[in-house]
Image: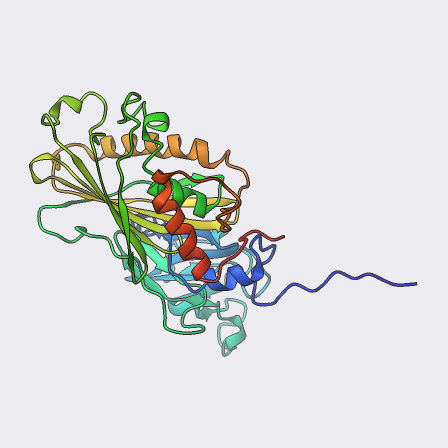
Length: 353
């Protein structure tokens, strides 16, 4: 009689990992946003999940820490804990306190004993940029360390800095980024926000490789003003949209407005799991800077919702990297380059088979 036993999970993967193991290890070497800095400043303790790894983000003095969420003592989520009157985060079960670098700094049951290193949390590197907390789960493995994506105009004089509230999508990050780079869906998906349903034409455009992906400049007569402001576009004005893809799951768009206006949008698709994405969108603009920020939040949320409706319905849920698995049209030049770039990173199927 043969006894079948389940294979043991890999110790370097998160519990219940939804990604293909080889793909997970490639993705874990990249930088991702996990929280808005303002949320950490306000709450003190914020929960996040990245690539199925559950994290706690907390503040100690002026330092923000990203660490594994579970208390090392008895596995209680530290996101249930408190930051009140505490330099760090306090576990709600036995009061263990964790400070800078994820180090355990207090065990209330034994205040006079030394603290063994096994009580320390596993912490991750942190970069604060564009109003976001960025981290990398496997920094420096197998080659040079990846870079936090670049956002043009964020620090330029005359530009207003805006960070939209995080937006959750029940879909794969690769599908969301491909949709952000897509220029053929405006007339069908964004007709309630800015697009013209009678203007579906996509002029020819080219892509250029970069060190982190590719870029494309695309001219069209499709405006970027919200409905109700379209008459502000000068006659015969051509809108230039400059896309930059930073593989695997970040992309940037600069929209050139009339009279030298610039709208800079960073699309940060943080993969919570293979089937869920948390979208962060820092925005910088040098026009309408006196308008209420809530207008920007409301408008962009409508745009996010329009895109999410399609992303959440796409099948297969993952992004097919074999070019033979889906049909393509000339407007898909960016999509084709995006998928090629992911293949060249060594990625394959994303989801657990």
